[in-house]
Length: 347
Image (cartoon, rainbow, N blue to C red; front, side):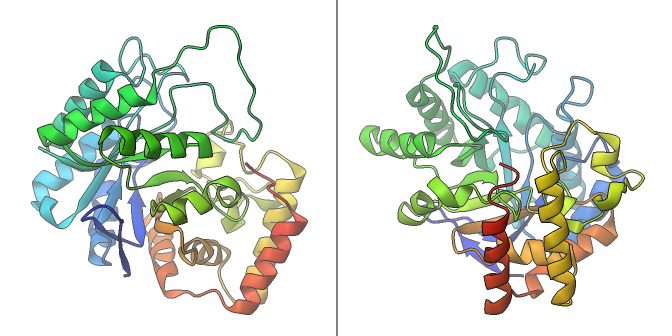
């Protein structure tokens, strides 16, 4: 395993991070424990979760993933060996079942942290992230920003930052990060922290994969120059880049088989054509499509950690082993050529 320190922090995270959002929905606690044992045995020390998980989000299962992780940490007694990241949910998406009057204000953030700490059975969360913005913006697969002129409701970022700063001071969280952000939001967090002497964000968790390289357009330069690395999620595009959904194949128990509404990476002809091209390219270079896709993400200098997920141990082994795969200059050239042919097929 390789490790990388997140600048402006003491967090030395594994280049592969274990994502958890299937635990409590597609995976049982016993299966989650098996995944954790294997991943930690392979050198992974970075575990990412959220108060909203598992996915798809619903009131009946909300918080189950953190509870499972908390049970594991208590049973194994290895909390000090790991870096635990979680997230506070923003408003929208019918998320008021988590808390009434959802927003990213002081009350919501403090309640969210206390609830997460209780489920995780921890005193401190190492990295606490804002899951998505509390404003009208273009995220979760939207490229175009649409202006609202009729009384947009939002929590000012300064209020969110001040609430997070209180929690750092109280020792409930160590560092803060953002997720599903835009260049404007990214810079605003940095500017306000510097102006008001508040904690600086140390990471940004956004989608990044061969079908969605939008991070490179407006975010990568900020990430580089401000030394705030990307925690890349959906590196396999919901599993689509493995090729398992091509030709109308719907494997039993797979996420997109169970939850057809997650069509972000399979819902257009261009997406399917691009996926097929990447799968064929992997085979040409004698690589598994999944490992090629993950190795591509691992190779990016602005990536601090690559958040993988799996529903079975075989997938997990293949995904983690991508750390031992390399992208040759020739293969990178071919990947970039395909990226020009299929320009942002899936934002």
